[in-house]
Image (cartoon, rainbow, N blue to C red; front, top):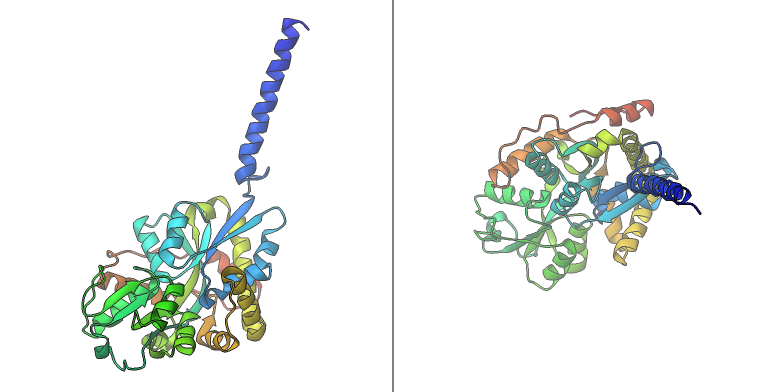
Length: 348
């Protein structure tokens, strides 16, 4: 073999390897058409996230994304952790409560996220020991929330403030606020380590049925017409800009999942419970499942007025600097899908 011929082979090999490297690099994030080959979706193992539970278990998200796009899911205990994953690009979109979305918007100066659909309203309560009958009885008591700065944490701190009870971010004050995972709260309440918890479903119902707790405050009684956002769908702004087609497919699946829930609550409850069993290894008891689905309204409306008011609450308790929320919503695609399906459109 001549030196010239060997050189041609080497050059050809380099070109092939370079091409293979380029294809490999593209294959990790996009297909030949420039579209992502996977979508990473976050959610919580809560009934207030039943839109996600049903959409995942029924294969609704995967169906709309198509065979060429893989759905990857990740569950979180509370919103701040989900937002951290979003910032780190560990997920592309997530179901989350209002206050973590507000914090993400504030910290990124309006650049990191967009709220693209509502998901659920209601389904949150302050559950306490039977001997506690008023806000005054909470003085000196320990009350749990899912995570410091999450939606329930803000709601509890603001409500206590309005009752004239002081709290601080270090867990001191008239009422000791103990941020802990909801699964831990079930155990600590039953063992008497805490006196109550401001939690979403199904944990509010489980604290009542499994440990003899009682509802001191149903959060919907604090909001006009009993409506407030507990869960909505947010997306990384850069992912939305790069892959609007996939975001549209996510929203289409989201709307279909909510339709399934609202058209047949019994079937939806069964599907959501099956997915909870997959995630936690323990399905909800029928009585808990029934109670939770009665307490939550599943809606595509993000109930924007409650988000704005919730931001004021977070400011008042020292968990948020004054923030301009103008532009946090992008409901254009959602409304296009709702209109095409003959459904009422929503607004911010």
